[in-house]
Length: 364
Image 1 (cartoon, helix red, strand yellow):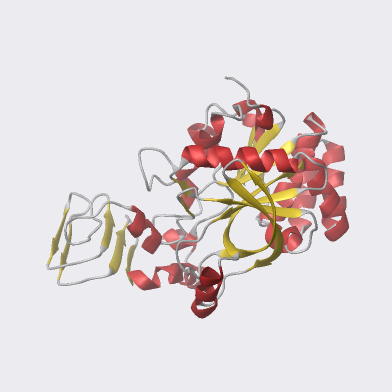
Image 2: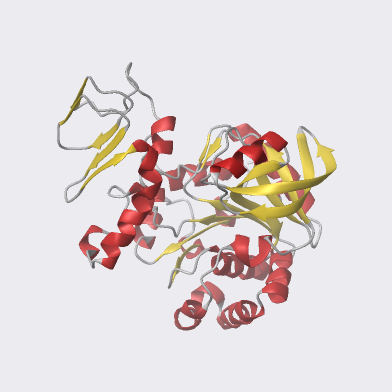
């Protein structure tokens, strides 16, 4: 593989520890969203790895997941060294995982770049993705610089975080690079519409690039207790120090990298990119991305949608019949059936929380 100079010291860190509760009942703790074949013949995780393998070799790709699914992740990613598929001993959101990854990379290359990517998103424009990452890596090679890949919004979506842009820093190839003024969490619809109209906001897709040393310096400044704990794990042998990792990791604050650092750090830039991106965050989004019949239904072959429009039907075994319904999501598995209004599919996660509250662990 010819090595692009921009990626010569780049390490991909693919975060695959989430559970994807809004895709229940198909998504479960032992089969989370990133391990589903929602689009195509491979899982979302396999697609995430395939997107970067052309310019970052497997020996420089890390996957962070959880203990429940590590064996399955190893199975579906045979090209990734097993020692680089790391099971977090406790769910602590993205900040501790990224910090742990930074120490692993620093141990191999003091000037190594981290390319942090989610495992469960869709990117339709692979060439544009590579070009955007090339620009981000060139920027982030400078110590102290952190770069977000910001997605150009196409609608006033309330399910995404937003990045407010400051001054235009540079034009690099076909990309505009901006200073970042603020990270904003998921806004109400009225505010999202205002963001879109202003032209000053990008979607936050959770894709970041920085030197591992830059990330660790920022953790030391803004999350000192976590930084000390991570340093102790690293000193004991990092991800290979199983007993130390199991003892210390669960003590970390459960916090995302957005809240831990991105809302606070200086030297933050955004590369504005059009990648054909979606976080596939709900059944409604999956519906939009899926092929439909003449009446707008997404359905398997073993189904009949009579006088029915704009429904999403998911069933691998049973023959599904709908009569005179519209805008529904119907998902059938061996032990559960979901029926919800398509516009309410973001709330499936709330239903999962209620199942957990009632102690229905077999359904989770």
